[in-house]
Length: 319
Image 1 (cartoon, rainbow, N blue to C red):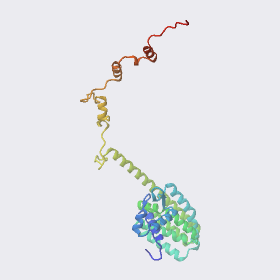
Image 2: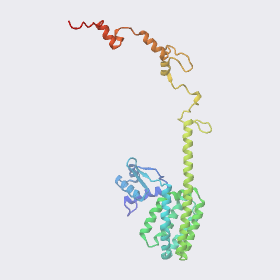
Image 3: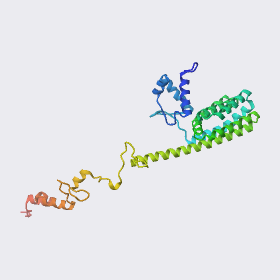
Image 4: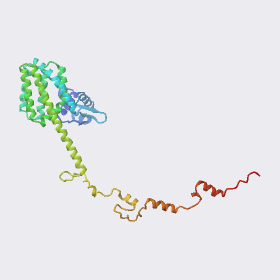
């Protein structure tokens, strides 16, 4: 653990870097006991770090499943960039007026590093640092903190877009150079316009990458489900641990042995050995009636009483 850094800050920073870099993708379950063992800290420290990340919007705590890496939706992504397009031009315009020579040199060095960088994740780190250097020069610490939080929420998708669309790195760096040129000329309006164009281009790429990734995942899931239902892949090879389903014409009769025994016959009309075929319901009812003994108990109620009491007596009237 670095000196002067608390355990809470260390755990929070490790988890935050993992989420932003994509090592911990959206939907990943963050188990407190496992994190505590790997980082050599207590569970209370991990729990506190997870609550900090929840406040930043990087983690979602579900009562049933625990802590999960928040997976940002398309709507949320658009909202984040709307916020950035409202605030970053203001911060960049302020930085253009107040930026020192050291800030200009640092931003220029980061652009040079991004031009020669081939790794998408490292390029994303340089990109984040470039924007942070400019915003911190705007003499508004609160605005810089807000923008850093908003940028962290979208950083995962920025990294993914740079990995999927390498050409975006060249375009983004050209836009960075345009921002820096406006700052060197001390032109706040030109710097703000350059930031807006940069954010529009980044959002356009993010949405394209997200749509392509969603379509690919849905197609893959549908193909996998179709393969599992059929038990075979498109090339005819069997899938392990999945029994191929038979065509409907070759499937056995679903009635089974018990249904055959009850009916006394198989579907093809052959009789089942040792089992007498069932008679139709009408014949069965006639046979039942033929077996019933005839007697007084089967007479109607009035007839039963008359049979027991004998013939009715005649009324003789008064004597």
